[in-house]
Structures are given as structure tokens and as C-alpha cells.
Image (cartoon, rainbow, N blue to C red; front, top):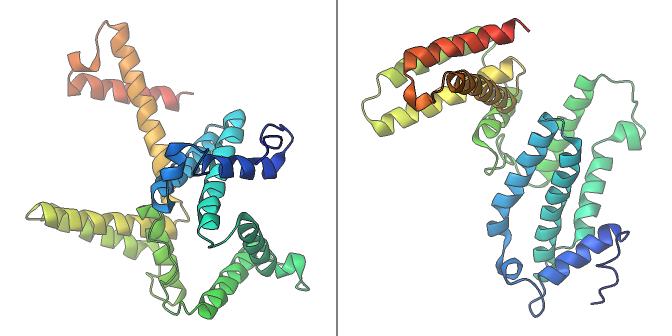
Length: 268
């Protein structure tokens, strides 16, 4: 393989594909890259997707460019492994997603009207997906919900599927009642295994409440994480100004500083 394309800064997508092929070359490639397979690379794929989301949340657009490149590399990596095994190529991947986008947007690429609300278009999207699943013999209501999704995200998707066939609470009141019930069952858990099960039930119902409130639970939890980080750093800064660290403090003092952090945020 010639190095001309690999070293061409304007080589675009063909350049990236050539770089990946060279990295996986059994004779001249990188030993680490050669050893990898679908399963070993999958955790990096998930991690890169989260780093894209993190850059967007921080509005770090230069970082986002790099993170999107890292995520693109994951697609290239998987397709190179697949190509070596005769499963499919990058061109097959691009063709498949292109065909899917055309098929799922008949109001853009077909003869259906564009005179629809976003909600109607979402309903049409789900209808077309259901038809695709039926053709693929995914006949169960919950078939096709990926097992590798983050647990909260998968919980919401499972609940949405069940809700389509009427298996859902009519309002948030019933969901909140169920949360109270599950919290009590967690309180009454008799051992670690029982507590883990009841805690899972409680999280599952909390995800259901998020769905009813049209809240993304992953996004909400990321916000809560950011808030906790921000307020705890406030505590550290105030303690540092007093010549101390959290290990030199106690809960009462840190709790008072937490309240001060909340008050400072409200006054902005």
C-alpha cells in the first residue's frame, strides 16, 4: 500500500480508511491494533460517544471536532475488522444508513407531505421502524431494544415500547405512588441481594417517571452530577480559604457550606 494517500492532509475519508487498514496489516501494522476484535473495541466506542456528549454539554466546539473524529474512527475500526472477515465493508455501512434515512423520511425523499408536526413525524418514524422489525421477524414488542445501552436509557426505551400497546400508567400520579411503594420495599429489604433487586425496581420506576415528564434521565443525572461537583468544589474552596481541607472538616460544617453554595447560586 502506498503511503501517498496516508500522508495526504486532504485525503478525506479514503485517507482514514487507508490508515485503519495499515494499522491492522498483519505484517506492517500496530501489534495492539492487530490484536483487537469487535468485543475489545466496543467499550472504546461507548466511551467515545460519551465524550462527544460531554464536549457538547461543555460547548467545547474545538474538542467536539476531535471527539467526533474519535467516534468516526470507531466506525472505521469495526468496519475494517468486518471487512477482513468478509462480513461487510465501509461502503456497505454507508449504503445501509443512507437507504434507512431515505426510507424513514418519505416526507422528504418521497411523495408524502411535509405538512406534519414534529410529533407526527416522530410517530411516523416509529411506525416505519415497527414495520422494519416485522420484516426482520422481530415480532415481540420489546425485540430490538439493544442490551448494550446504558441501563437508564434502555429502561426508558423498554417502557416506551410497552406503552405503545397500552401497558402504561395513565398519569404521573400512579407512577409516583409506585415510587413510594418501591422505596418502602427497599427500606424493608432483608439482605444485600434483596436490596439490590428493590433498588433496581426503584430506578426502573424513576426512569418511567422521567418518561412521563418528558425528561431524559441520563441528561437529568448528568446535570445533577455537574451540580454536585460545582457545589462540592465551593465547599473545598471555602475550606481552603480557612486553611483546611475536607478531611479536616466535619459533616455539619460541610453541610452548612453546601447550603451557602446553594444560596450563592440562587443569588446569581
